[in-house]
Image 1 (cartoon, rainbow, N blue to C red):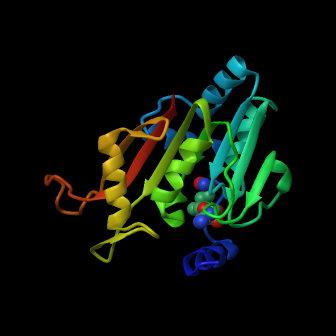
Image 2 (image 1 turned 90 degrees about the vertical axis):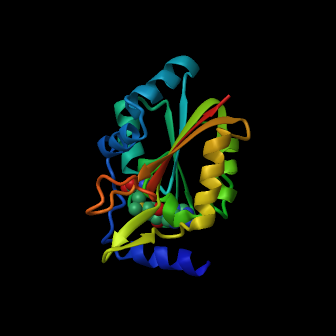
Image 3 (image 1 turned 135 degrees about the horizontal axis):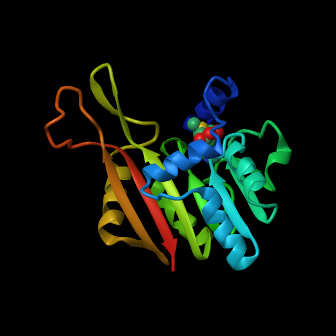
Length: 214
Ligand SMILES: C[S@@+](CC[C@H](N)C(=O)[O-])C[C@H]1O[C@@H](n2cnc3c(N)ncnc32)[C@H](O)[C@@H]1O
């Protein structure tokens, strides 16, 4: 286990940081990504069209959102989660892979992949994002949100494992608009700097990524 992964395991094992975002909160994240629909509607469309829907959550926490999704849509939604820590209740998901996402194989033929509030801790996006595109089945889509910077005691600092190299990689992907067999939309969300509301912010607080497998 690398130093940072060990630290995250320790931090989350204390149980003081939220790992239980609900479906409603995931839908708010989706809205922030510019998608004015809900995970229920997207999953229901796949079920209608294909007879099933495989959804993967990278850094799924306790699997709360996907558990609710299954209950709202149908048992034909196959929910898969990956996380460093075990689930509180193993029955909430159809499949759970415990481990560092960089060390485990990703499930294949996914219709939807989400990752919210986790990628800044996972890091090494250059290694991970091509694997995400490969894990999507034809017509599949991924919704990813990456926190990038925050202001601490008046100073702008990187979140978690983020750094200039990660940002350069995302900016290159934003200009190329494709990765592997996916069309990719990458947009930065500006960091509001106190007292500088009228200046064009030079820093990204985060990045939204939407991938569509052709
Ligand atoms: C802030 S929690 C968010 C959990 C969930 N997505 C939610 O919104 O409730 C971040 C999660 O990412 C997981 N995580 C961090 N680094 C990881 C890694 N390298 N591989 C797999 N999971 C990781 C943590 O264990 C934690 O459960």
